[in-house]
Image (cartoon, rainbow, N blue to C red; front, top):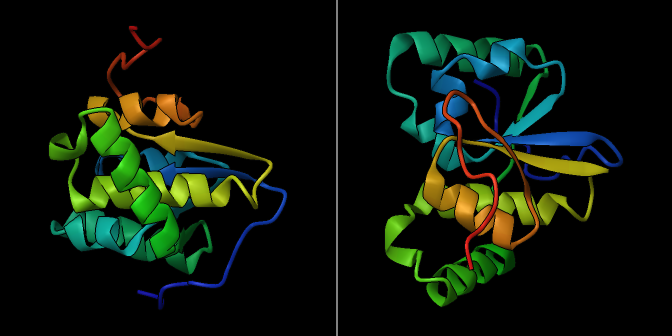
Length: 143
């Protein structure tokens, strides 16, 4: 597996930020867009098939791994607490959300690929677009 690409930003491109479900489902194999994830998502990949997928797509430069900056992680933690979602989010969930808002400064469009309802709920509150993998997901936020 390649080293983490901390300094790489696909400036002006459409970016898809993947949670672990996007890797486990094989979503990344069908995507034509540049995909980005966090080191914590990669650490969640334990099964051999998913490890092969990660190695293949990183070697083909279809997947970039970026650690979110602390300022964005802190912002997500604050927003999660405000919205009573903090206990529902793992550190990995917080990382993919943080990376999504961080990339909004660099990419033309950012989409977070996830089926996790808690991630979707906070992402929508933060103006992050969602791509659902398998399940219906959240269409709109309730007041």
